[in-house]
Structures are given as structure tokens and as C-alpha cells.
Image (tube, rainbow, N blue to C red; front, side):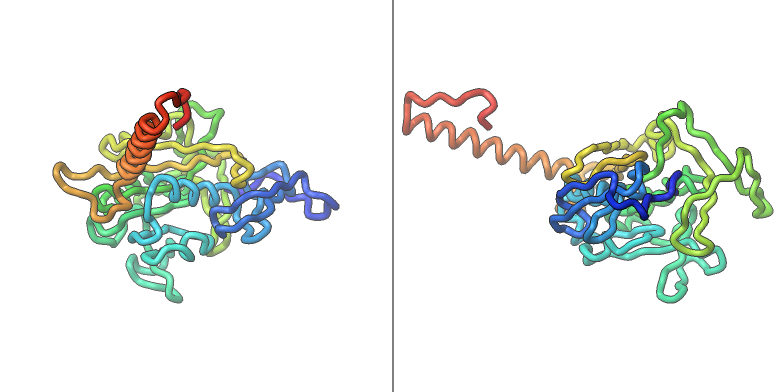
Length: 295
């Protein structure tokens, strides 16, 4: 999604800056904002990442344990932030004139509405600001869900408008391939081609319920955080996660796919260790009392 204002590049001083940790380059850094439109102009001084990129990687780190070693595919990436940390990473772009599954200059051609990947072949599927540019997001979500392994996750961003009650279609594709505009044309930046991508959908407060209905009732996690120590502060900065349910009696392919279950298991183990230490301390020092919240 493009910015609505030009950055103040000629300003002697940025609007603000702060020290913190960047999830994209894995380094201590200084985050610098040169414009009030933080979504595009609140940058990491080390790697140039923007808030939604940092937030998506933070969500990956916090919710999908071991994602670096899983099979990860990203549709239409505009950077190498995820690729540099993931051994099983692949990517694709939408090339209208290249057959699906073929390559142009080493880059795979894919359409998220008609993926060529086999069923249950990917652990984590990532899209960043893609679903507002496809004509049939329902079909795209179903295709992504199809190629995910049981327990796998679709992790993605898409602008969710706070002032829009119901999501609305802006454009549709006619049977002859021409575009019918239902609302005035709107374009965002595009990492390839003419650097303009038509906005086909505006998403509102019903976005999560729409996604759930589109993917057979799969639960949707919405992550929204303001934390400048991590460079997270911007408009439209939600990160969404849809997990493909495990089949009954079928374990996940990799430990990382346990997701929340793995986190809960670690948390429970830490809690049990804490209780054991309290019991031991009580035996050694009978008069010792632990205050509530000391865990």
C-alpha cells in the first residue's frame, strides 16, 4: 500500500528516531521516521525495513517455532528479509505472460488463485499486501490452504480499513479478461512490472469473518502491536495468521508446526519447574513464603 505523502528528505532532522531491535536484520539499530505516514517511512537504519515487514517477522518468531528450518514459500516478495534466515525458502512472482510453474530470469511464475504446488507441500505460506490486489481472494485463500501441510500456516498482511464496516470489491475480471471497475481506480506500488498494482478489494471490520468463511471455518489470529523498541508503529500494521487444522490423530510434520501447542508445552514446563523450585526452597527454608506473581 503506497504512502499518502512524500517523505521529508530535505528536513535537517527526522520527525523522530529511537533505538531498538530489528527482527528483519536481527540487529540492534536506530529506527528513523521521516514522515508521519509511518507505514512506509519508519525505517530501520541498518536494513531499511518498514513496520509491516518487521511485524510479520516478529509474528513468525513468536508463533511458529523453528520456522527457519521449515518449507516456506513467499508470494510476490519485495525484499530478502525472510529468505536470508530460512533454509527452505522459495519465492514466486505473478508474471501474466509466463506459464504458471515456469521461470523468468530464475524467478518462478505463480498465480495465488491457481497455484501449481502439490497438495500439502508447504509448511508456511507468506503474502505481504497481496490479497488486496487479487480479483478472487476467496479462491486465493483456498489455494493457499490447499498447499499447506496440516498444521501449517498462512502468515500475511493486508490493509484493514478502520473506517470501513464491510469489505467491498473495487474491481472484477470479466470472462473476456477485461477489468470492470466498480469504484474509482486505485493503485499501490508493485515490486515488478510498471510498479503499479490495481487495488481490487478494500477490507473492513468484517475481514476476519470473511477469511474464516472462505477457508472452511479455519481460525484467524490477528496481531496488532505498537512497540517502538521493535520498530512497530504504523497504520495498517496488522499481521494475520490462518493455520490449517491437523487431521485427527495425525501429528505435525515438524516440531515447529505445533505452533501454539509447542508454546503452551514450553510454558507449562517452565511453570512446573518454577513450582518444583518453590517446593525445594520451602523444604530448605521452612519460613520462606513466595509472593503471588513471583513466577
